[in-house]
Image (cartoon, rainbow, N blue to C red; front, side, top):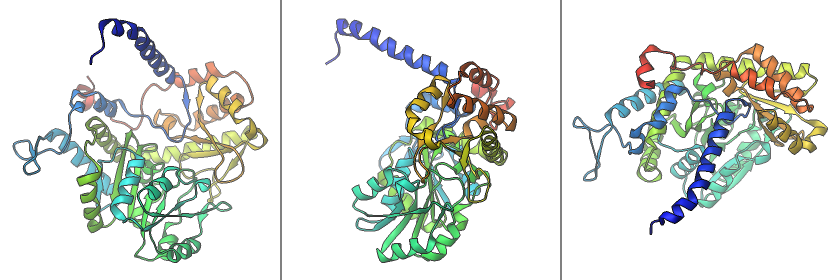
Length: 429
């Protein structure tokens, strides 16, 4: 039953308030210093894909010469231009990840977890994941257990931020496990994958969750999981890969890719969200063009920000290389002030600064900072010194709101993108 005109009139002011409130938050977001490690900045070129009227339609492939997708007898209109773009992005991604094949159909990072676990293991199989307190993802044990797999937990060595490969292998084989899922969300340096593979042997399935470092891996800077021992790489696409909120999977072995993709495509995915697919494909091609420089600048900015914070008197967790960070994350240890994290967080938000507090990896509460978004805004080492000073002052109770807004106002563009190319101006309108 449809709403009456009176009810529509009664409801409309509230709806308008909600929409105006969202619009106000969107405007304010432009003034925020976004230091969260789990958010990205899309280019205008990629964001255009999310707003296309074509995004209302299903993408099931480009189709044949007549633009028809035929699943015998289910037929569907193909989108050839979208198919061409996705094919180009898939080719680029295979090269950047050293993959035999890739799948861009997943909708999120958690969806890639589900697809990987359901397509590569069977009910009753043992799946080992990383303990949540040691940086593992909260969703993985739930997925493992609720899909009838046996869950095992492994631990990260907190003293040197490495996995104990021999301990993992001992626990893994004792339990008769099938897969090791490296679902780490809080880390500063590459995993010792080669050691883990050597200890586990060839039969174990190793799944590497690259949600946080996917853009760095594509930039050739962090590590190359599929050449170092992982069978499968999964991840969301909106952290160091600065794309839309979506997911992807890459495979080292073509036979494994075919088996898993058949299951995923025939039962674990329906709509691939056409607008997001277009935005993701564009972002992958931007990474092919600019990813190496972007990745280098992210890591340089992480270390410059860390140096600025240490100059301000703060203590940081360091990567096992001795540097502040080998990726986009900077871990600012709060010490005794950690008990006040809610009060501190309220003060940061009031000063237009967004970040995360957490207490994984020992050493109490810390601020997990991310440099990927401000790097894509075009900031460099000079700005990192300003960011470090502003963050330090805000944590100590100063009012730096206007200074933060002023800093952000100086970076209205999206760097490492196609936005300024003459060839895309027609696309941008």
